[in-house]
Image (cartoon, one colour):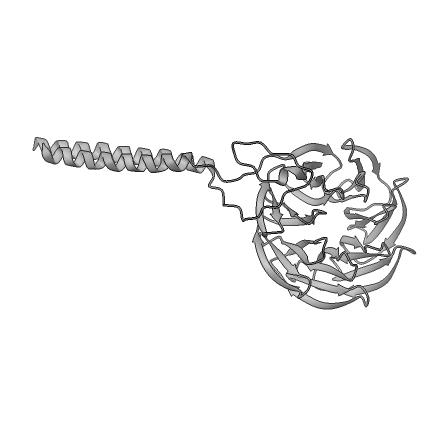
Length: 390
């Protein structure tokens, strides 16, 4: 009788201890997590890729690669107000001049750049560049447009005054993303097939240095203060942060699957990263270079742009043919028990976010552990019962 009682009590104590520990863990405050931050979903054309917002934040221009069109969205109503259909061939990326007068669109299918008058939303001219032009950017003074030609391994420099190519710069293999520093001194070009970033001096239009980053770098964006360039590495699932002072990678941040594009909010607080093969996008705090938090608004996103007034992010979802509008106010972290708090501008997290233990996995683990512990009690009871009878 004594042996039966001792074994049963021991097994029972183990069960109670395990149950108590998991119960306490489950009742602890849950780590921060994001909510679905989409405020609007706008139907555009087929396979939207690039997005750009006018300097006055009034309109967003979206390239629809399979429709050969560009959709113009009013940010006041989040409705398509115009669709540009002529002289476009597999339009890929789009950027708007600093004065808002023109939108420049790369035509991947025809090796050209279309220039759209934003007052009339018509194509006024087409400029021949290299093969497979992908991303492009206009210098802050509006004088030049730099175009990454993926098939040529070059960058075309277009004079916006004459809309002619003034020079061509040889870079790495399959140049994809392109961004110009706020002072206009340098252009950063990602070379997807080389795993590098070429730094071009805009004064001489020569490559001054090459920076090694992750696998298949795509999008690139420079912080408003010009101190850092953020580069998405498609094959690595990471973002490389380059110091523009030293042109070295200072940190590498893990994000989602197949990060494609990146944009920095105008206040410099956040980098929004689209993950093409993931069910979420990543928001990076530039103060800590940590992901805080992820946003789950879509299926597969591609191009991204933020309004200059810092209020909204526009994300192209290429599979659904839509553009998703996300409020930057909801970038601030919230606990699971509270709702997002609106603010006039995003709040920077001062400390890294604690990785979240998935709630469903916690519940499953708790249940499985309880079953195992209970089974151990039953088995021990049966065995000691046999011992007692014997």
